[in-house]
Structures are given as structure tokens and as C-alpha cells.
Amino acid sequence: MFDAAARRLIDPPLNAVGRRVAALGVSANQITLLGLALGLLSAAMIWAGAPMAALLPLLLSRLADGLDGAVARASSKSDFGGYLDIACDFLFYGAVPLAFVLMDPVANGAAGAFLLASFYFNGTSFLGYAILAAKRGMETSSQGSKSLYFSNGLLEGTETIGFFVLLCLLPQHFSTLGWIFGTLCFATATLRMLAAYKIFND
Image (cartoon, rainbow, N blue to C red; front, side, top):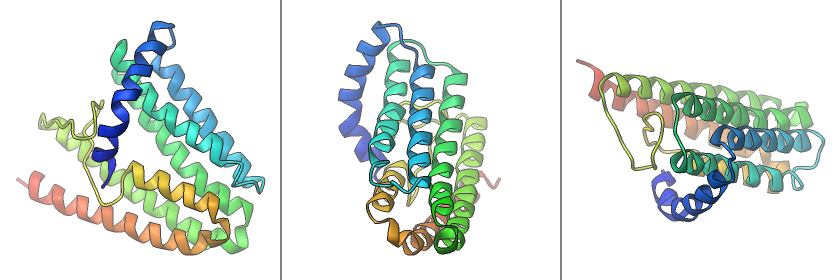
């Protein structure tokens, strides 16, 4: 919901940094993998019972996730780079809830399973929509220049990062927050499917 507005704010400085990083010979794929490594480090710290400390690598991971696209635009974009980016994003998004479940399976298990199921459904609706959009030659730049079609929704990347930050700040409320956010994820995916029905059902 807030991704388009967030992109307008963060893209100009990210693009400036991206040009400098690309000039150093650092590739977008290297930045993507660095972002994944930081995200998995954050998840490991949560699992170890240090969610507050995990905030720093978590936020640095998402900074790298924005920077890789800027580096790609300043050098050369590739289909594989876009594929790697989305695969790493999905792994990160799954690792954080899993880490909270592993940190306290009794308190967080049910809500964590529900949350991961909602992510699975939402991610499938997102990628399926992108495939159909590509098949029809649809394009959008409302959320920046992307390798695949980004359909908007009730919950997007900005909201998910905000949710993860909230979980790290209030880990004792993971269960309540997980049930709420998971419900909103299911709603997002359902609304996207309804939109796909209107656009692609011919």
C-alpha cells in the first residue's frame, strides 16, 4: 500500500549511491546476496533470543535490497538478477517468522504457522499475477523499475518491513501481531485474485 510513496522518497538517494557502488565494480547480484546474508543473520539472532539486536542487520538487509536495484540500473540489469532478488526476498520473509517460532515454539508456533501460510498464499498470488501480466505485455513503474510486474496490494514490502521491526521491538506480542498481519496477508492475496479475475478472465 505504501511502496509507491516510499519509492519516491528512497529512490533518488539510492540511485546516487548505486552509481557510486557500480563504479567500484560491485555487482547488483553481490549486493543482493549480501542483503540475504544480513537478513539470515538477523533471523539467527532472533532465534538466539536477541530480537532487539537483530534490528540492525535486518534494516541493513533491506537497505541492500533497495541498493541492488540501484546498482543494476547504474550498470546492467539482467533477468537472472531480478530472479535472484525475488528469491532472496522470499527466503528472508520466511526466515524471520520462522526464527520467532524457533525462539519460542510453544508461544509462537500456531501464529507463526498461520503467518507463514499467509505469506505462501500472498507470494503465490503475487508471482502468478506477474506471470500473467508479463504474458500480456503489461508494465508498471509505480514502484520503481522492476524485473517483473509488481501488483500493488493492501500489504507490500514497506508494511512487511515495518511489521518485522515491530516484532523485534515487541517480541512478547508475536502471537497477536502474527494473527493480525497474517489475516491481512490473506485479505491482500484474496483481493489480488479478485483483481486478476477481472483483468485476466477472458
